[in-house]
Length: 619
Image 1 (cartoon, one colour):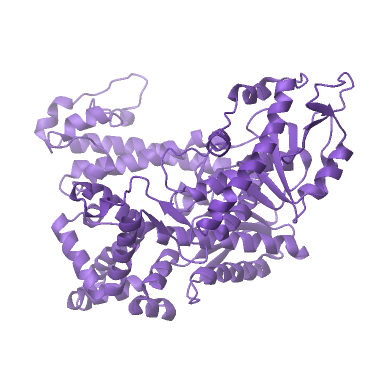
Image 2: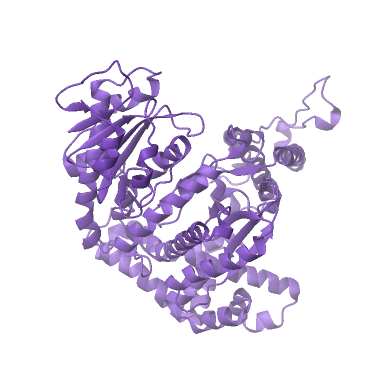
């Protein structure tokens, strides 16, 4: 039965299926339930400017549809904030922000069918995780998208029968999907990671809701500086090009009576046109197929022009991505509100609109993000998180000893790999050798092979192969650890992160017969790299997500920290803002909680945290 709640007195009854009800009846029904479906309909996607217009709650037997334009959901607060009643949503972050903004209610005990499905089928390409795909997959029901889209253009008109029915059935479907997902979660031993993600979704919703401030004038100054540097680099490219007689045909003084001579270009090349740049570089490298970074990087030291061009493109990218166009992401409250993608194939997170995960680590940019007056950033950063994950998994004695005694791991490794060459080297040479080893150490977390190492270090492939072989000769435990991960993925078609979460990543192109099929060499290579990479990155992500839960729980349960807010997380770093008067005390708590989370997965207690306090965002 569908119960419709509205204060619109012009409406009597809709049908035998839909009856008018009251908010009191809804509360009475819901408070006795253990599991409820929850859904919303809104005017649009921006929770700051578009309103919540319909709220739906219920189970398979009865669904309540509330016209929130006429009826407050305040009386449902005890139900929605209850820790004992499970609230099932699909893509909960969206609904959470609208309910918090327009109902002033914080949802607790969330179960997100979208996240659960992502966890069950992580790694499967084009599988589909929208609600319509789940209703088809589990319930053989096809949703009518046109009815859903009608809510955006309602403009105050009463809901019709189809819209009320659509809203109610979404709630019923959520409960049914939840029931269908549970046996699969149990069978694959994914309960721990499902609980983890369902707790984290509330915290990410809060981060998105809170937003982060930006010093606009400081940001513009950086853009202006980079804009000037970009033009200067264009002129340097022109000069470098014309040093070679074969490019004399591109000489062309761009005359403009209104343009100062210092700003005139001396060639006709548009350095932002890949086609024009390829026409130039193919005269240096006839086999060159395109001018993307991967193809050009290995030639940067052989051809100064290419080196200059790579530097130009890096600077140009910064100027365009983090310039005045970035300011479009500032919302009506003068803050940046990113949108997290919570579960990638590895279990890591990403963000978009804007991508805060890719803000340059250079503090020139990060320092533009600011805390409110009298508040400071208190940020915790895991020290060598992925290296700790590798050391724990491989049980390599050298790595473990270096981490335990606080030695420079990259230097220790370089000493063993290069031996006399390292010990007899001057400071500059040691720095170069250490960089080579550092590239391998961190590359291990990404399944890096000889080709990638060759590109990274600008060396030939054979030299890269020799270096990797030399490295693994010194660290056989690490080689065996990575090889065992790669072999497991190739044999079984999936890989898992460390206990206790054991999230799973499927390789959907895998078949049981593939392992000994030489024609599948490239495909198996891809599976092998992902199998080495996922447990490292994914276990690191599990640690950070668990730390977010501990931190959020401490904020909510400790009165003196009630005004602390989590405002950002970037892989191994968690950023909060706290009043300056409690920042030192909160910093100690933050450190303890992050290290506690680390020790749940990396149980040797070696994963430590650096905590900083600053008026601006820092790396």
